[in-house]
Image (cartoon, rainbow, N blue to C red; front, side):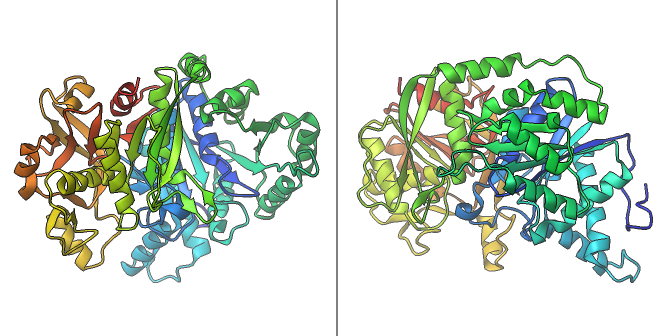
Length: 547
């Protein structure tokens, strides 16, 4: 299908595909990802095949080189793409594995067009953003649907309307609507602040963001109102009048105790059915029974466990932000609800010299990079090991456990990782051989060990029991450094168990201590694949050890 005179390019031929595009207004961090995932869940519950993708407006090729304090947690797919954390929400709500086709950035689009220009794909024409970028953006949306054989593709645009870097993505919506007016629904998510001095929700900022949409030639089909409390009919009426929508197409999405309640909040307002009617989607009778039971379990979870997460990416100025570890936190919740537990996360800055680990039921040292704050992480490991406090080390956290054991049990006082001290006398953690060349050439982006890899579990180890007696598993990775096997015999003689290795035995994937309530470190990231309806067994076992 050719775009006609307004565009250059074409879309892949296939049966009719529907699109729900979610944009944001007023401010970022509203919860567009959760809104998108919730809409997808409601459609999936009616037998509609859906997939979801995130469009980041950065010129970065992917999220892998972004500072987690600025951008939040990097989520890794099975096929090894470093993406925005919203893909984690999509996978958790929809219960599906996504892939590289479900994520794109401005940088990817520009690179694609520039590569085509270099290979003369445009036959010597002047290559212009307005003409050549939108067709490639639209193709990306179609390819996501093709990859997952979806009837509906949910496309979330990062950032907010009016930002310069996102203009051509909004132009892509306009062109897609021109081409396929019956196949595209635009959902605009905006915020209604409630200033304490005024005492009511104010709709003007949302009205202005809709006006910005209008200036780009777009009119939303639905508006989702994010706010501290439910939006009343008066406010809905004002927004409807200003935006030219029927009042029933203004949807309230207030703050709730758990993000997993959002689908049911939207369902009560008939949101999914309205979208289905608008897009003329074939569907079955909805089945939300499993999700309803999940929410009941969440609300019944009264017992509290105090879990210390010792990180270095949560503090920014005077604020503590948790987006850098969102998958870890969600995984704890998933496992806790299984036992009627609500984990209470105690955030501990690994650079804090006088960090208090007492009164914690368990300790987690999550992912990390570089030398900043590592001594605090090692102290946390030591406290957990010596005081029989359940410990879970995730990737960097496993490496810190190895260093602590080497220093305090093997008496290798200068033991370290070559990432932290390249000249360490005892490099118990060192760079993977194939990674040296990448670093020498400063090829940092997308070159580390990424995606799902097989792991052989040691028979009768704790980890094997956790996985139900399995001896082969697959888990997602994101790292450049590994355990140094020349020290393996020393560790084993001192009782450390290497309970997971690569199939060829060359890479240590998991360690554990046998005479401890729970002491497990994994080089992989189990938190990436935990879901509310299927908690990851490592997190389940971790919390069980505290009961």
